Image (cartoon, rainbow, N blue to C red; front, side):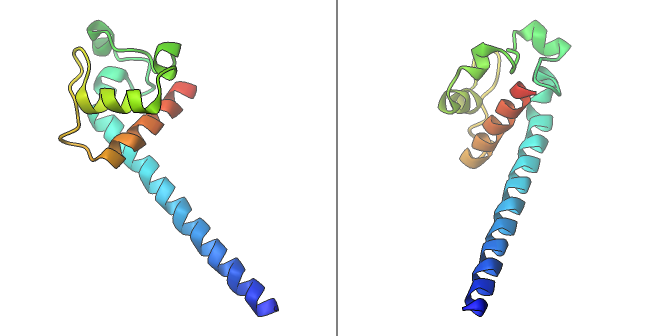
Length: 109
């Protein structure tokens, strides 16, 4: 019985490590994508760069942005909106999903 517990513990620990590294890689990928494709207008902290503010970007901290569903935000990233280009052709759906999560996190800081 003790050996079974050890095996179960090791299996669970392995899953936690793999899942944890996966989340970390997604977060790093989203941060990198954000810096490359979004920060120029939306600013490093999501409040909008000087250029972005002139173009009418929305502050990610605002209820206007945070009140949208993940699907709505993903649709905006994919298709674009107003002066913002769409990224559906250059980003995979999983990358867009990770980017939405990153935008949510920025908005809560």
